Image (cartoon, rainbow, N blue to C red):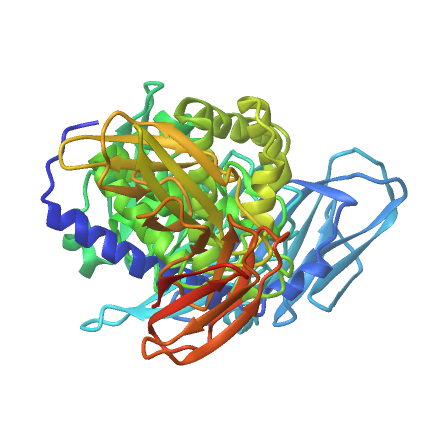
Length: 637
């Protein structure tokens, strides 16, 4: 990795724009995927596996019409196999189906092409058929195929596909499934040769040849397993240039860029960043998964990007967008989420890998700044979990706050408790094991790998941070005497699904001349720690490791018989009685007006007083027993 000096202002603006862009990317994906998720129920096609597709299309980019044929090789996985079905929207017309050069009967209904064989096919025996079809793919209800214009001064047509999760059926007959990857793929697109059209797709471009109809045929060959939603094409008068990355294994990998001509000069200013990013990801997660082919970018007309295998479609060559889509080549493509409820493995890890680029290309400070920004965004609301219970809720599925940002924090806190070497080893192990076993992975499988590598039981961690909602809120009271730092820790998580979080937390203890950082167990309410200097203050989570916040207050009188937290508070306070003779708490305004009265239960460790109706300001809370009364000021913020 070459040394790079960048001014602080650049790193600051990089983080600001990244946060803004992440929202727009997620919003764009939400819009793009809306109305697609419900199609999932029709996709259970476990009776056969796809081994190969040869997709041949003829397209005039200035027309809203395509013709095509798809030759599909498949293996029946059940006995008495006599019918096969493919997904294709009803807006497309199936002309015929050929099987061993003979036409087969078929029905095209409910977005399915159902084909009947004249005989029963043998289980586990490779076979093939070819579907001929045509139509206007932009009429699909799932926005899988788009046609637009670019270059305002000289408007030019641009076509692109975006099939995640169920848009592939808008433009080609296929099997849309998260359980069966296509073993290999050829995509051939014929476009008029009298204009400067170029076609971008997966894999390696073969020599361009002409046909008798005046077309140029772009043939892209891909020889890695690929899930259906990652098959893609884009067409326009692209300007093309390449960069080259020398991989850790000594391979030279081409990074080809298909860019709108009017954007070319701007794009060339991004030269080098993608090379830096590839080096980071290879060192941390293993070799680029498609090193025998290429990586690339193709510009398209939608905000954000889409991680099509070996060829990401991009709105522009923004630093963070490039990092995010490149990260998907490992998390999302090499290993794909096994169900849409596991989408955080794609998007959460890609968001975190984007932050890791800042750490490894720039410095730790910019990485911490990014993680603080992601944390602040997650904590804008008090609820929300990474786990998606209803994948038909597209807005929730592509939530930038939960799937992307909180998902990134879920990965980050795994790294914190495991340490760097074990965390990255677990990531590589998960990727390699799942890739070798079909190329799909879910949260349970990820958990099992991380437990095996770390020799830690992560059940509580995933319950607290993946299944449950909200984030951690710690209330820390401290005092110092006789070279002992005394801590009193209580938790009031932002959401009632969690009573407390068990992940250790760090505190930086310091004065004007000295400081030290300690790690404590937040489930221990009272702790005493030897400290050879008198502290002035405590800082929560100085290295940015935990998704939460802390209310820290110094106890001027450590013998005070009641702990009150948090202080300041937002809507409620909790009290803990050190002296159980107190039976009542009363809250007063500063002018002496009694506002709230609460009976106390001596045997109850923590008792809540709801104060949401109060205005912001300073109040006095008094605790009464038969023999005495004590009081303390509290602040509502």
